[in-house]
Picture (cartoon, rainbow, N blue to C red):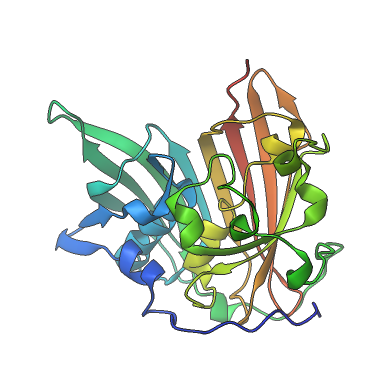
Length: 286
């Protein structure tokens, strides 16, 4: 088990927290939902991709007969901005153990034209119905205790690329992956951190969709600064997380042609691998 984390005041609970309020969707008509995307989850001016995935994931959870995302793949078409948006869902197939649906989020441009921002295809099931057997060679990341890790509040200035979203999160980064913040990136393409929501809300399957995309980009440790926009992100949710802080480990093995992959693992307080993801992201070189 991980070493006990520093106690924090708990004010948010699952179903009643800032994350729940900011991802809540309103059913307008069958398969159509409205939402006002919160400016609290932005990086610079764009809305964070993990937050967007959680928004669409919540709409699909309402539209499909099964409650939990098992696999969800998103293509990010244009950058989303804070403000009104419309989500359209479509039930592709329903079965006894899995249902499949798709969803797209739309906003309007300055000329009043509808623009698709993100499109997802997902399979949903019931995590509580899964058998308990686990056969794995995966190991949780070796992170220092939380009080030996560092968050945005520990720096003399905001971390490069950070913005409003950092106030929504509890992030404590492994010092071994913080060379970029000191002007000495390791070149290893690794990022590791303790992760939670700032108001103390415990993790659930929807917040795992945020967790895989909430750390600073691995490109920073490769010596590359600036925005790293997501092209495609696939998340597999493996089980319902136990209460307590999560540990997130992200690695990049290959940057070529201006694109890199990020492979993420999310582990809970019971040392269980609760989510995995792979992301293709674009790097602005030069």
